[in-house]
Image 1 (spheres, rainbow, N blue to C red):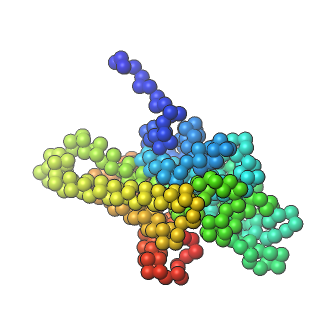
Image 2: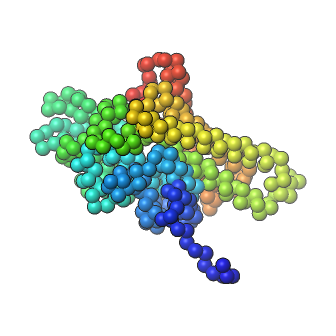
Image 3: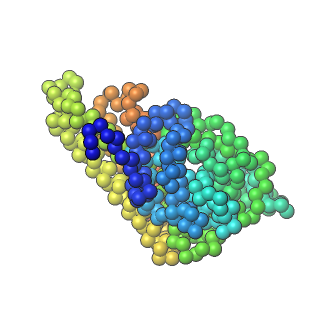
Length: 401
């Protein structure tokens, strides 16, 4: 390359999917502060992710998507998290919503993806709404908070309690609803993961046809209505897959923080109020960096083990056993805990300057502290679930396993 010549752009189309994500990290870093301030992923990020095909990881190949495995999903989330936690979280949640749509009947999948395999959806699993059976379909009403990705979606999957004509509870379900039939209320005023725009969705008497209603009760048992039973991705265990979608971005934040701290140490700065002219020469720096790196390695190994376990059971055609599902939740809790502990050590190394408003580390800290408190990745809950399963105690603390 001649002196001063522009560096060629990465060939995103030829890269693996995680490679495509890695190629966008610098763009995401440049836009991370604006994403945080605007409480919405920067439009340039959305356009780049769309151009790289990273919103269609879990869309069936027969409809133009990648139909990638869960391992690829978490690897992509981890790469994007290096650049921007909110963008990574939003992308991962949009992709897991695509996976959920892949569980529906073919008619529903075509309705969403026939025109564009990159069509985006968001999802809120808890049954915050109600669905009442009527002649025209199911009449859905409710308010669904924490709808990550809703600002960039055309469809929403909404958890609800299904009732019959007499008001008696029949089932728990997910209703797939076009966003133009919903209202977005701006409620996402938070300290971290601000850019996810995880606002509240409101439905008031929206009629949803039967083919766009998915039984969560059946899904928890591994029974999905898709007609394409040979597609392993859409045989993956329901809750472990949903939970794994959250873990990749969390690990990515810790990895990104490590990269920033190492770059800072390379400048040769010292440690205030000590005789260490270069922080990198201090044993305390070296030991804390090594421990942080080991924690990140531990988180990586647990994340990939859980993803591979989900993929392997799906490929086998057998539904993942209870103890394996709870172990996956334990692995995800370990990712959250180790990522958080690693970042804490890195903040110690970098010092009080980490919390300057213009420091990306304080944003990463806010994002990781917020994201790791999601109920699906809660380490304490995961530990209790896994311990009960190991002891053969069938009475679990939640049906979401």
